[in-house]
Amino acid sequence: MRHGPLDLEAIRRVDRGEVSANEAFSSKGILRRPFETKERLFGAIRRKDRDTVLLMDSLVMAVAMEISGLDTAAGGVDAIAVSTGLGEVKMPINLGIRVSKYLGRKVDVFSRFSAALGAGEIGHLPYKNVDGIIGVPIHR
Image (cartoon, rainbow, N blue to C red; front, side, top):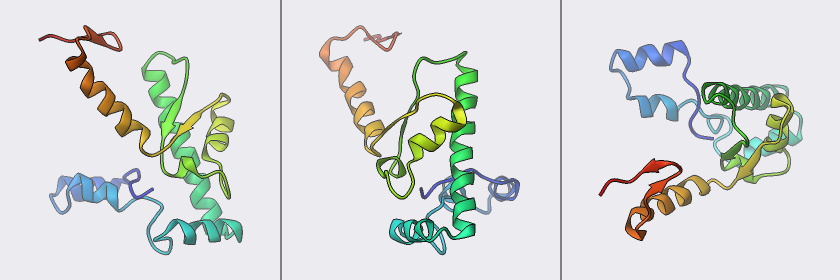
């Protein structure tokens, strides 16, 4: 929610060395003025603020486009899962349901910590005498 896709001007600023890529990504999320907190964002959604509705529609579309691109690049996948802080919220917006409608298929949404927990579990596998991780061999 604090990071977001870069527009052309942001990419140019990174290329010119004016900001780092992390700084650019960190300035493009939806939690920026006037929505520095989830509470402010959700309040505006509940009030059906026109600009906020457009912002959320744009976010949902961007997530759906990213997933669709990754699915295409992978040659098709059996399941789709995302890990996000916004995904934990069911009201006033349900990201999983909204993205699922764009994609025409179910999207499972896990907590914002799921990706980190999974990476931690994978990091421990070589110490458990596992020969491979999701089909990738481990060489000792």
